Structure formats: C-alpha cells, structure tokens
Length: 204
Image (cartoon, rainbow, N blue to C red; front, side):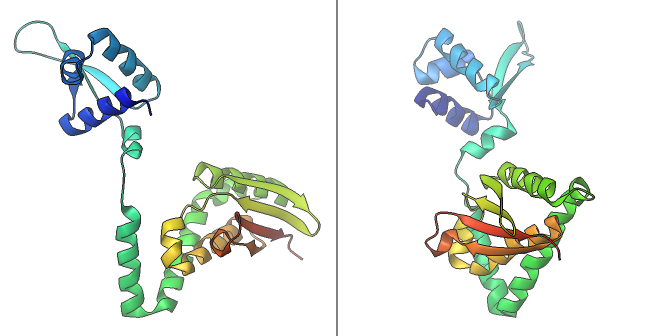
C-alpha cells in the first residue's frame, strides 16, 4: 500500500469519515493530490463517499472506509482462538477438540454440497480447488496415477495449527465430505513440507 493512501485509511479509521479538505489539512497536501489518492482507493473498493448535509451552505462530500478496507488493518483472531482451544482441551480433553473440528468441517462442507453433487470426480476436484483458493489456500490440482493430487500452497489455519495440530483434521474431513471419496494427506506444510498435498482416490 502506497504510504499516503495508507495514511488516508488510518485517518478514516480513527475519524470514521472526513472530507477532502480535512484530509488535505491533516496530511499537509493539496486537495487535488488527496482527490487522486481517494479516486484510487474508491476504485479498489476501500473507500466510499457520500453527500453530508450541512446546516448552512452546500452538502459536503465525505469519505469513509468500506468493509473491504477492514482486512488491511491488523487482527488478532488467532490469539483469541488459541486461548479458546486451549481451554476446551484443558476442560474436555483433546478428543473433544478433534470432535469439534470434525463437526465444523461437516458444516463447512454442507455449504458447498449442492455445487458438487452429481458431478464427476475430476470436476469436483477442480471446483474444490477453486473453493480453497477463494478461501485463501492458493490451491491447484492435477490428475495422477490412482486419482488426483490437490495442493494447498497456503495454510488458512497456520498460526493456530502451530499450537493445535488437530485442526489439520478439520481440513481433511472437509475435503472428504466435499469430494465424497477417500482423501489422504501425503505432505504437510507444518512438517517441513513446502505445501499441504492431498491424494484424492476414486471410490472403489
């Protein structure tokens, strides 16, 4: 992110909304320069504008962050999740944690089940790779002897998986339910592998 545009986003995060003149004054830049940066931010769906009525004079155009812009600010969800998982394991044991992950995987798979039903396995694997990529996994697939290979180059649960390896069962169960066939984890990013690789086997 270009420095000035990041500064604009930071100001809008703190102030909720601001006009071109307000931003120009805070950043000690010309109004034209601010408008150019705002135009790029609007194009990227990070900032939205609207007319705001004044007590006197013409309405003032103000800018605010979109929901999309929230993803640019640091979040600590994984820290909270780590604490929650630690408490569950401490109170109910690791078996309960694994069961929870399996239930979550089933619910996640159910969302996409209609998209995959009645399709040949190759089409299901291709669709699942797209679903994973849309979720941030950078997935790809290819046919191999005995089935298909599905690779995830990014782990969506990396920070949590470092402490709670049982979360890996969530992804495996998720894939098995989505594909409706046997799936085996053959390479793991957390075990010095460059990626997570799954072997998808056709049903016997």
